[in-house]
Image (cartoon, rainbow over all chains, first blue to last red; front, side, top):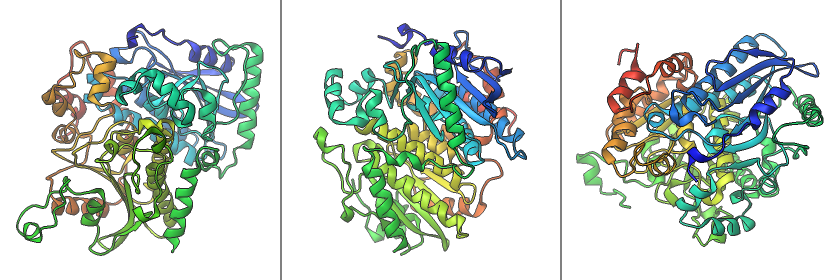
Amino acid sequence: MTAQSKPISKRGGHWFDGLTAGMVTQQAAVPSLRIADGEVAGHACRVLLVQPDPDSHFPRASRGEVGLLEGYGLAAAIDDAIKTDAHNPQKRALIAIVDVPSQAYGRREEALGLHQALAAAVSAYARARLAGHPVISLLVGKAMSGAFLAHGYQANRIFALADSGVQVHAMGKAAAARVTLRTEEELDKLAADIPPMAYDLESYASLGLLEPLVEVESAESPSTNDLDKVRSVLVDALNDIQPGDTGLERRLNGVNRGASRLVREQLRTQWEA
Amino acid sequence: MTELTNTALNRTEQLGFIDLSARKRIESLLDSGSMRELLTPFDRLTSPWLEKQGIVPQFDDGVVIARGKLDDKPVVAAAIEGGFQGGSLGEVGGAKIAGILELAIEENRKGNPTAAVLMLETGGVRLQEANLGLAAIAEIQSAIVELRQYQPVIAVVTGPVGCFGGMSITAGLCSYLIITREGRLGLNGPQVIEQEAGVEEYDSRDRGLIWGLTGGIQRFATGLVDAFVDDDVSALSTCVRDCLAAGVPTLHRSDDIAAPLKRLQQFDTREQIDAQRARFTLTQGKTA
């Protein structure tokens, strides 16, 4: 299946609509970006979504991919929140709704420095977190590779819906099979033994990167119950994130991240020796 | 890979950096005798995932990290071995880089200025460790954004592998980025673009096209890197020291947002791009 024939996901839009009902929509720099400011149980927040823009003048970034405009557009929206709240002791939370099939693959993108556009977004999210903005990601669809690095991976907490349509990976299965000279079936067999290679959410959860999965009635288009549930998950997280909690250390506790912990322990010992 | 140990050659001619191993690269840049490698191959911290896939692991997982000095100032250094699994980052190698950057942050917090130099020869995430490579890259990126508040983080891309995938984003976060003619920098590798977008979009066998758009000369001309140097240890060493002396930039490249966004919004995409148009677009309003 080529990229162009894959259906465009509408999940992100549905969740954004539901969660931001009653919030104030902000004018985004680019049409593929949606921004809303509001409150979740008294916590000020800015909700951000990258969505498909079929009319994008960058043809390789019209289906929800994170491209040049999306990278800089996210950076602008987040940087604006950092500057606006600079002297405010209550920093608004940033909530990233993640439904991104990939980064944009194209000649214009490489030539014009897509890596730099995505670095702008990564930097903005990381600076926000370091400045004390609680950053939360909610994975409602795909969270792939460079697209996820730019939109979601710098969060204090990453939540995901318990649904097979939610997927985190470094590369789509077909492409990964070709690059590693394996068939997709072989990849599946390997993944059963090797959790970081797997495409299912339970394996991903074993890496310690996720908060407990959120069970919902309809991942595609949330019910009122689903929205209430996710709001309560967000509120709990916002209450839980402490002012000094600006790092990513809690991700190191996963069952399948032993080597990441061991490296840091031994490194510290040798550093201090 | 050949290691140039001929001192006569060293004295009389350029000493190439590209042919050096990751370990020698660090050693050649740091103040003489100041390098202390941490988590050496003798510690045998190997990838827990490769052997299960029939791939022989390496005792340093293809990443060398060290403490040392540059012009007598404390630094941490990391170099990725492009020759091991394409310089791909797995769990252990990624944790080594993130870990040493995190320790450098702690030193700075304690009031001991400590900068960083990263030698990035990498295809990005190691697909055999997929999600843990990606997670490690996110952690490296977080550490760079924090560390560069205190001291410069300097990246060097010399080839032969170049810097791709998630690690090209990492390069874009650094305070200074140094490249050679043989270095390449880009998010997506040519084969992946060709496969995803078709050969008309990107012909992975067209070396002229690829080097013209993503090679060191072009990246310097478009302002996406700060310095262009020869493949020469002494030239690189001077350049890295100059970057360190320049200190933390007032505005990091990654935080220059409004101007590039405006240029891209106005960019006419009706025709396909070439190197000349990329230069023009990215340097509009700047004195090149």
